[in-house]
Length: 132
Image (cartoon, helix red, strand yellow):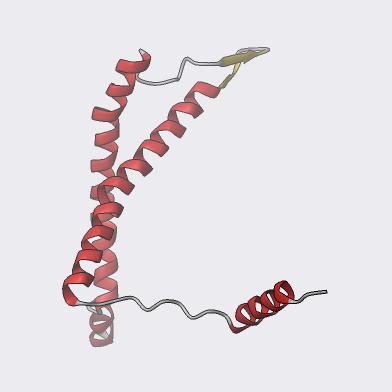
């Protein structure tokens, strides 16, 4: 039984997944630090506050507060984190992948057109050329 379990644990997909989770968690901390320590202070220099927590707070009745500013701060942080990941990871990886494919001479084939769309285009062209 231990032999089967060991083979299961050592399969490539399981190890790859574990590595991806650990690297993802570490990378999340790096991106959060980038946003909290570099980008948000730049925004604070422009706006005058490092966050929007005190912005638009509504008090209802017995001390019940609706804090739109806190939500706005979280939303801005999310957008900044998404932008940082896109411009720091996705764009360079796409560029490297394109350069790698060009170096190897790999060309992506053009997708085949749906036969129904081709038939509809022919019908459209015939109707345009038809004189009444």
